[in-house]
Image (cartoon, rainbow, N blue to C red):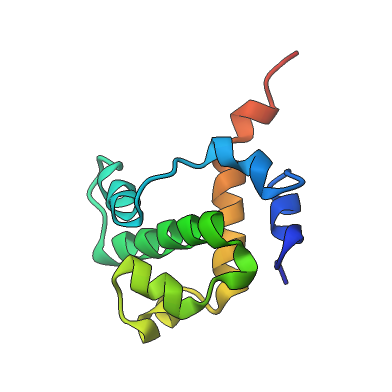
Length: 115
């Protein structure tokens, strides 16, 4: 289970402060909107909702820390019904794992640069 400081360790950081440069911090609604608009390809409604949930989770974890984020907070910030969260993710650790995999995939080029 990924909770607390282990989340930041999975991302290769010792604390939330080291993670800040990698996260574009916006107002929650703008950030969720950017997550959906940023991709030029046509997305299905399911994928758009999944991205809204992931973006809302990322922003809430950034603001509050993982221990203080509840699933209801995530669904409220994403603008979806509370029960629909479980159509996309099993539980909170599942969405955190998905976020960490996405982060690692997107920042892989930073760590694999030739010296």
